Image (cartoon, rainbow, N blue to C red; front, side, top):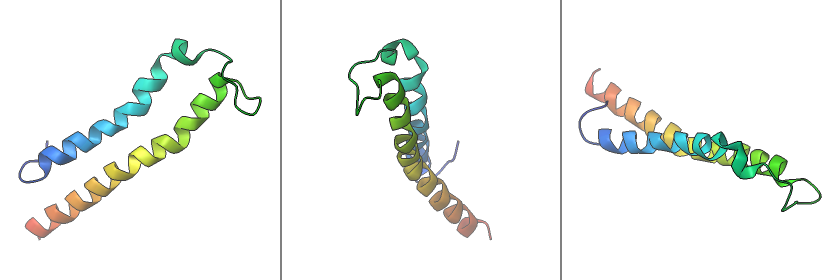
Amino acid sequence: MAGGKGGHWRWLVRLLLLVPFIVLIDAGFYNRTEPALAGIPFFYWYQLLWVPLGALLLLPVWASESHGRAEDQDKHP
């Protein structure tokens, strides 16, 4: 794990990567047709909803990792 100031924060932000995995791992939760959205069964639109949500959850992880790498490079020129 990254040490120093901000290392703990970066580790917590990385946990966001688990959210899509956790919500989609149990297909029994969303294996149903209702509620339909514009005629699309819940099973399909729920999974498709997580494509942009997963990308949005990736943004803070990417930002913290990019910021952390810049800090690491400043410490070790």
